[in-house]
Length: 83
Image 1 (cartoon, one colour):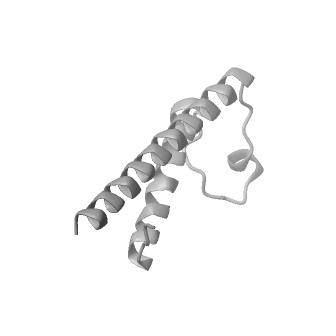
Image 2: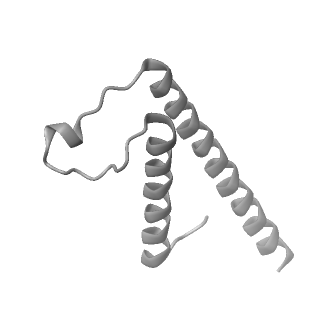
């Protein structure tokens, strides 16, 4: 089992947030995901194809993260068996 420290967890959350912000910018043309308390700034008209593209990018990122986690877990088991 892979365990993470608080620092590692915070770093992973920051990386996730940066990835989501990049997807929002690249696919939905939304400059920030931070709430700015302004309807003009917080609500966006986006096309369905842009939403589909953003969801696909997020899905692919999730697959990649899952594969990375699975590979790390397999490496950890292999190392434990070798010890």
